[in-house]
Image (cartoon, rainbow, N blue to C red; front, side, top):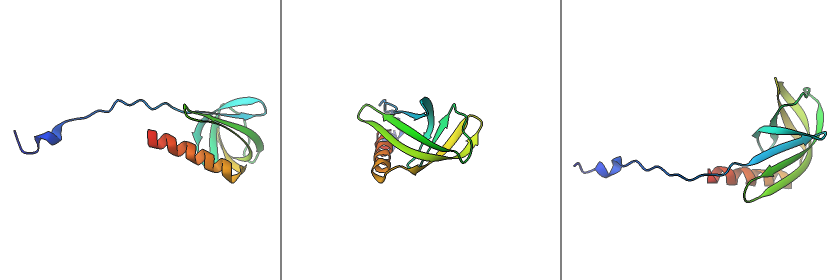
Length: 109
């Protein structure tokens, strides 16, 4: 047995981190969120056009918090059934709430 054999022990943590759910509602349609950021959101399952202005309701949910935000955005890119929407009118308090929501998820992950 060598002097540093204790370093060869593999430790696996089995901590389950609950995922968050995010949905975007545009014109009464619920869209799945593929990617969420502080200044944009990418949604799937929609037919939007580049440059189109949209009004949305963003619903974020995890075991500790439920957020419901309203805002407006502009479609930046469309790639098949995926569209990236840049936020144009989302209050700073709402952007900070999204940032805290994502930070808590990343820390617990």
